[in-house]
Image 1 (cartoon, one colour):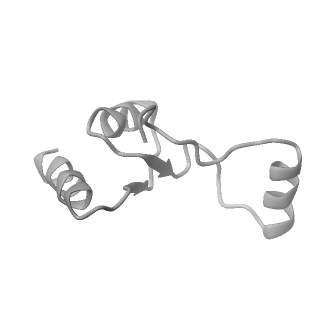
Image 2 (spheres, rainbow, N blue to C red):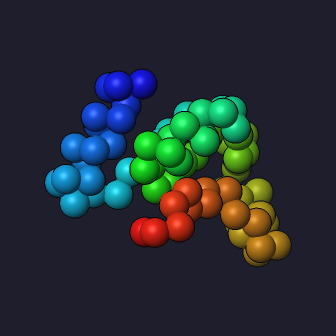
Length: 72
């Protein structure tokens, strides 16, 4: 966890927003959120989708990559 926290901090210090990839559990999502990670993607949100399926989700108002922080 120390390495992840350090990478998030370094990225913020360089002016970057952080996107975590491969998030599979709600516990991991909460840890990343607590560390200041702004966005996440992974199986917790959706399995990989074909382009047409992804477009359908977006048209129906779905969100697969929600922002994690309230203060962006």
